[in-house]
Amino acid sequence: MIPIIQSSMKPLEDMDLPMMMERLLRLAVPNHLLWLIFFYWFFHSSLNFIAELLQFGDREFYRDWWNSETITYFWQNWNIPVHKWCLR
Image (tube, rainbow, N blue to C red; front, side, top):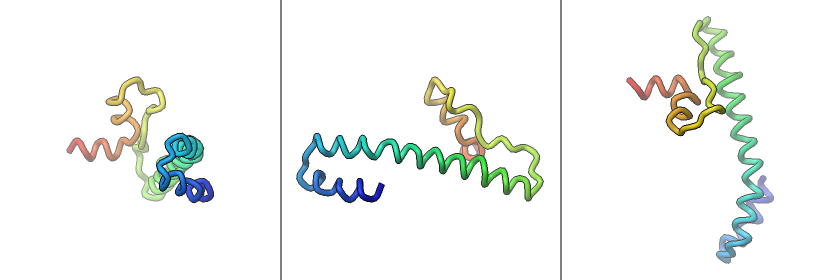
């Protein structure tokens, strides 16, 4: 990703729109994969590990956000602890 970002500076400086779009699309897949890896690591691995150490019974950190058909359903189900905290 770093070489793609470094090579993206020239089209940004020159305001070359087609080249900027090409660089953006080349960064989309690695960026998406990094977000999925972070989600799995944090919400599935780290929080479950901490819950196991603290003997926390209710381990519902997220619901089926990947099946969401509306943005409201997505924001209510992708991060349950934050959603419950925001509702307080």
